[in-house]
Every structure is written in C-alpha cells, then in structure tokens.
Image (cartoon, rainbow, N blue to C red):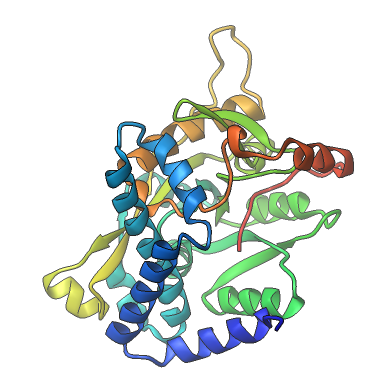
Length: 327
C-alpha cells in the first residue's frame, strides 16, 4: 500500500487544527514516544548528532535527551498545524524575544536584517510573530514533492504573513533574496544548519566537521546587511502568560549579536566561508546549551555523510549557490 503524503498532510493539518490544544499535544507526545521507542523516523541519527553536541553523556542520558528531542520535534508540528487558528494576542503571548533591540533599530532605519537559523524550536511560530511584530518576513522554502504538499506548506506560511521564495534549481532565488533585502526593510531568516549540495560550506560545528548552507553569509556580504545568528527554543509558560497564550508552551527567539564582518588576523576581508564559521560558532554554542530543541534527524556531520552522494551533488551542481533550507 502506497502512502499518499499529500492526503496525510491535508488530513493532519485540517484535523489537528480543530482539536482542543491539550488533546492535540497529548496525541503528538504519544506519537513522539512511540516513534522514539521503535527507533523509527531518524531517532538513531538524532542520537548520533546529539552525542557530538553533548559528548559527555552516557547511553542512558543520551536516550533521555533524544526522547525530549522527539517530543520537541513533534511539538513543533502540533503547534504549526494549530497556528492558523491562533489570535494575534495568543501568538504574542507564546513568543518572548531576546536581543531584538539591534534588529528593531536596523528595521526602523529602513534596512533589512539577515538571520541565520538552525532547525531549532518552532520557526513557523517565530515567522508568524515576526511578520506582526517586527516587519515583513521573507524566506526560502525548498520545493518539495509531491506538488500538493509543497503548495500546502506555501499556502500555510503565506497565510501567516510571510513571503516565501520557492527554491528551484536555476530559479534565481539568490537574486530574488537580494532584491527583497535591498528594496524593503525585511527580516530574512534562512534555515542554514544543513546543506548537502556541492555549494555547502564545510565548517567546524562543536568540534566536528559539518556542512551548512552558504546563504546567510553570502546574502550579508552581497548586500552589506547585518547578519544575526538566531536561536529559537521552547520554554514552559506559567501564570498570566500561559492563560493568554492558551498553551503551556511558548518559544524564545534569541537574536544573537551581529556577526562581525571585520578583517581576519591577516587583514583580509571575510569571505563566505569565514563569515559562515562565525555564525556557526555563535549558534552552535546555543545548540549545545539547548540540545533537545535541535530537530536534526538527518546527517549533518561529515562523518555521517555519504561520500558518493556528495560527489553526485558536486557533479550536478548548477552555477547558483544555495540560499538556505526550509520545509
């Protein structure tokens, strides 16, 4: 029997949206625990990634952390499917921003801000909040198959107030990002902590070699705009904020200080690889502090990557660099 992914997405998004919040969360927590217990859905890879983030953990502690990670990952999907029914007040109550002063100043001056994100917390909730409380949000989404699934994600994020540029090979996505960034005061968040294409930048991530997307650094260098590594993580809500949010969970968006574009020790201006390593250092430190919120169920470290796949990607690469990921 073949699984119809488009129908599953449609049923899940419409069905979960109308469930009471406690029921939906309980259901998704149960699914997370079952997937975790069966070691399905990328749990083994998640633990390999977490073992590098927290190398001092014993086997039992690593298993506890991966269970928390799977619950956080399924929490993201539960929240995402229920987002369209939330009021603006509920969205505001669910989000707490840290370090947003410099970002607001840049936007108020009429300039855009580039944000380098990892697959942390709930980036859809962060985008919906940003579109209402900071300014326009422009980002990239990888073109998924089947087409119905991609259109579902596209319509969903557009309804939340975001401008989505589909990533298709040869579509000029990087030129579109530059145009948006230069002609408007926009937030440009790019999911960039994983890139297996030939344009991926090899970096040191918490003491291990990994490949990430060049988009945030390339866009900042091409436009002269500030680049802020940005960490998103879940937090439990209490008291008045919990009542206003209608949920026991919210998120923290931490805008880390802009990445320095100053010269290196040799006096040379930074290139994409250098600037990428700088934001990876900043975001990696936060991932180590909050590893359960890093939804990385796929290979990202070179030790786990298939060299044949990388070689094929290199051979088929087009001239346009990869801006960033989204799903």
